[in-house]
Length: 231
Image 1 (cartoon, rainbow, N blue to C red):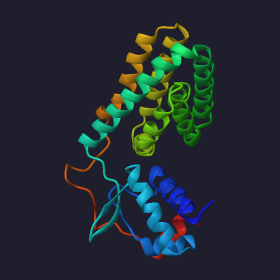
Image 2 (cartoon, rainbow, N blue to C red; image 1 turned 180 degrees about the horizontal axis):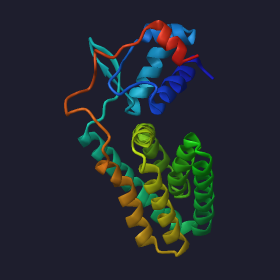
Image 3 (cartoon, rainbow, N blue to C red; image 1 turned 60 degrees about the horizontal axis):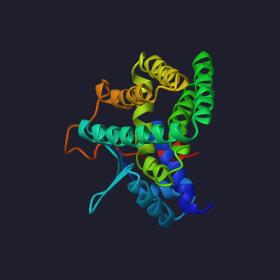
């Protein structure tokens, strides 16, 4: 694995997990030192992170963790709803039994994660559930489009699950209902429920920045803090 890919993976994980805050300024030099590499791979990683909307690179100002507004979340969730509902219809037309069995496996994984209070495992199962429709669509363009917002949506979900006690139960119940409609071969109801499930993020009480707020100069880290974060 190249150094730039290593840097990309580590920074992406820190953003998605919530270890790095929305709008936080990222120090190329200090992150490079903390990761034990030169600045060049980190700079390349920043460009790749920008391409999947996880950072904003502001000329003459620096690189900042993305800071989604309500309008941004609406656009992302609408985009995802379009992709996933299309994936659901395509996959159910071609591989309905595979879709059903894979969804059943992810719901079982969710149940175990809830019983074990393993929220990282729950998030993994949640993402796996949604990827079933994309993976089985037989359309090579859908996975690429899905990946464009996958990390940003996951970052939002992680913060929701950490801040709202009822979010996981609601999420789990919605996944079970989608599965029920798939088991009943009711594609229209499954599609409608999936779309509502994706769009419900717009009704959350997650605190988001106002429009026009893309960065925060007040939130920076020391080298020691980066070293602890990336150890």
